Amino acid sequence: MTVKASLSVPPPSSVPPLHVAIIMDGNGRWAKSRGLPRVAGHKKGADAVRAVVEAAPGLGVTHLTLFAFSSENWRRPEEEVSALMGLLRLYIRSELGRLAENGVRLSFIGDRARLDPDLVSLMADAEQKTRNNPGLNLIIAVNYGGRADIVQAARAFAAQVAGGQRTADSLTEDDLSGFLFTAGLPDPDVVIRTSGEQRISNFLLWQCGYSEFVFTDTLWPDFTPQELSRCLSQFQTRERRFGAVPA
Ligand code: IPE
Ligand code: IPE
Ligand code: MG
Image (cartoon, rainbow, N blue to C red; front, side):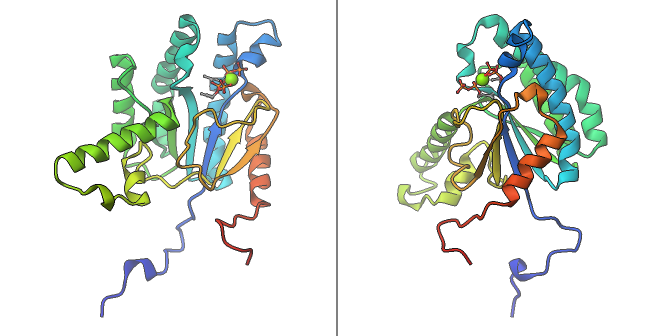
């Protein structure tokens, strides 16, 4: 008789995945309220990212997905877009060593086709250098849109059907998940949005099917590890039913 691997007892060190996704919003308002240019808010926002990434593993977070630039953010003035791309380059260049030291595995989701080639190679290099790290999975969403993600997944599946490898009616939910940019990642348990806005803004649409949402009025540059801890405490009070009746 063969024993299924899924029945085996997990090793004592294994922690259940806790995937936290954050819509980091409010940089512009933070700057405006201080009479500063919007870019100053984005710079301060990058400092908040550093602090949250360092604190996350201590709060039991195994996967942290950060929404850095949406597929709709190209609608912003060109100088703001290029400042955001510049900050991303700076973040990767200046943080990679430290992230690697802390065992962080860095990856990116989103469509890279429209990004500058030098940024794309920085991203690929960071992924390559950290791919075997055992610690926090840090996923940064750049030129990411939930609808675009589903469209590219549908195209990839359609190509397999056209190539005769699959039949159209063989597609399952798990299969479709496997075609998304987030293939292999657990769905977010909790989505946090800062700045008081209560909308999803085309973030992980498919993946958020059963996520809990926590909204805070704090603007992203003011977001601290303490605030992350408060958001996670709020999440812990939720009863997740996934369509079933309470136990
Ligand atoms: C979030 O802050 C950062 C990005 C969307 C890139 P915003 O720039 O959206 O700040 P607000 O919403 O204008 O205050
Ligand atoms: C969502 O914030 C995108 C990111 C945080 C990267 P936005 O500020 O772009 O969202 P809307 O336009 O207010 O919905
Ligand atoms: Mg905003």
